[in-house]
Image 1 (cartoon, rainbow, N blue to C red):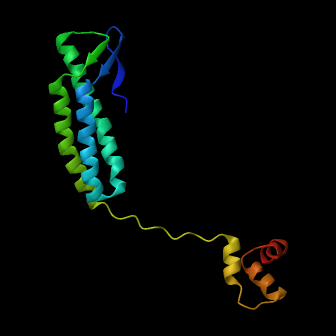
Image 2 (image 1 turned 135 degrees about the horizontal axis):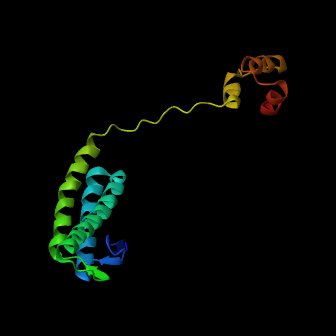
Image 3 (image 1 turned 120 degrees about the vertical axis):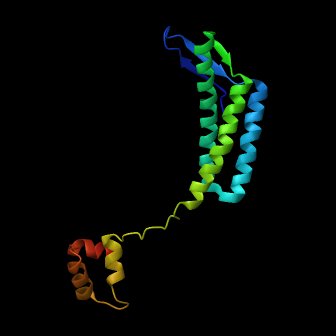
Length: 156
C-alpha cells in the first residue's frame, strides 16, 4: 500500500502530499496484519475485504485529521507527515469499527445459491426419455418451441 496521497488545499488550490512516517507505516502494517489474522480465523476469508477497506478508512481518517490541523496551524507545506496523535486516533477508531463490522458481518444471512435456470437445450435433453425415436424427440422439441432443425443438432 502506498502511504502517501496528494490533496488539494482549499484556498490556494495548492497540492499537498500527505504521508505516514516510516514508524507509522510499520505500525499500520502490523496493526492490520494482526486484525487480518484474528478475523480470518473468526469470520473466514469473506471478511478480509472488510479488513482491507478499514485499512483504507484508517488512512483517510488520519489524512482528514491532518487536514484539519492545517486549518488550525495554517501550515501549507508541500509535504505533511501525519502527527502521531492523529495516527493513533485513526487506529483507535478502527479498533472500534472492526468490532462493529464483525458483528454486522456475523448477522448477515448466508448466501444461498440460486437455482440455475436451464436453457432450452438442457430442458430438451432432460425431457427426452431413456429410449426415444425421431417422432418423440420432435414432439418434445415442439412442446418447448424448439425448431426441428435445432432439435436435430442437439440430438446428434
